[in-house]
Structure formats: C-alpha cells, structure tokens
Length: 189
Ligand SMILES: [Zn+2]
Image 1 (tube, rainbow, N blue to C red):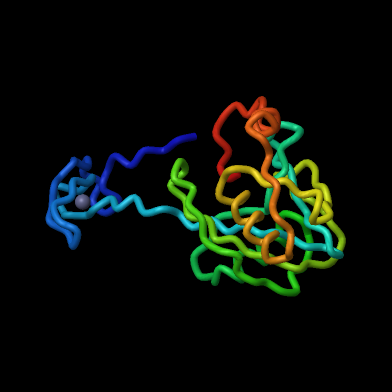
Image 2: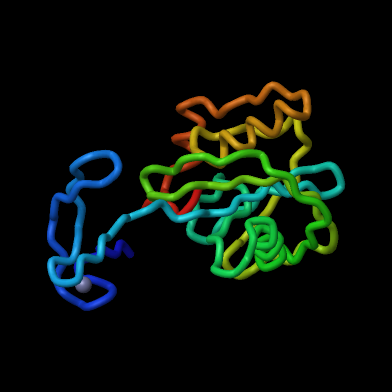
C-alpha cells in the first residue's frame, strides 16, 4: 500500500505546492496554505542487523519474498527508543534471539523507499523462533555470504571487509534470479 500525503496533518486543509525561502534558497514543497505546516517528507529510519550466532550469520526470508531471497533482519525504529534498543527489539521479535553486543556498521540510503538504513552487527544467542512475518532462515559461514546491490547488502559487504573477507556480490543474473517473483517492491531489502 502506497500512501500519499494530501492533507495538512495539523488542520486538515488540502496541501499545495508552495515555494518558500529556506536555508538552501527557494524551495517548492507541499505546504499548508492555511496554517503553514510543511510536509518535509524526511526519510524514515530503518534499523538493520547482521546477526551473528555461534560465528555464523543469520539471514532470513520474509513471507512476501521469493524462495531464494534472504536478507538482514530489519525493522522501523520506534519513538522513544535508541537505535541500539530498537535493533535488539527487532532481533528479539523476529528471531527470538537475545542481542548480547551491538556495533554500528554504517548508515545507507534507500532512496526508492525514502528510508535511511542504520546497520548494526549484533552478536546474539538463544533459540531461533521466527515471527510469522518470516518463513525461513539460514546460517552462513562468512565465506559463503554473497552481497546484494542495495543498502543492506552494502552494509553486509562493509562488515565482511572488517572481518578480513573481500565481499562477493551476486552477479546481475544471480540477483535477478534471487528477486524473481517479487510482485511488489519490498518494504526493505
Ligand atoms: Zn494546516
């Protein structure tokens, strides 16, 4: 479902494209002609985790994805939590694993979805029990991992380099095969 912001979230007036002078100069944005509210359309922060369990990396498959598509654990950051708390919550909710340590890998763009991905490497322990949102997972040795050309795939590549592994990316054909049958753009890849 794609939602479009058409009304002022403060007073309900239909928004209009209005040019105003901002720090960077004259900028046209959706603004409220009645109360002045601006629809900034800032990217949404999404948390992603490279989950390490017993020295292997857990990748999971979302119920909505093709059978060959496995990726990092991701989720939206919620109000009132730090990114570190948020990623520990997501890992627990989606895999039942407890995060014992957490370090930042980096921040990555996901322009198509207007998201910014904040990626962590987490070491986790416990028994894997997937949430209904996920249908399958695999544990990979580091040398078995292949990266994909999207924000979370670049995060995985950057992390592998820190572990002394030169990352291998899926070829264009392999990536097309991996994504085959993806009916709609994934919320996060
Ligand atoms: Zn308004």
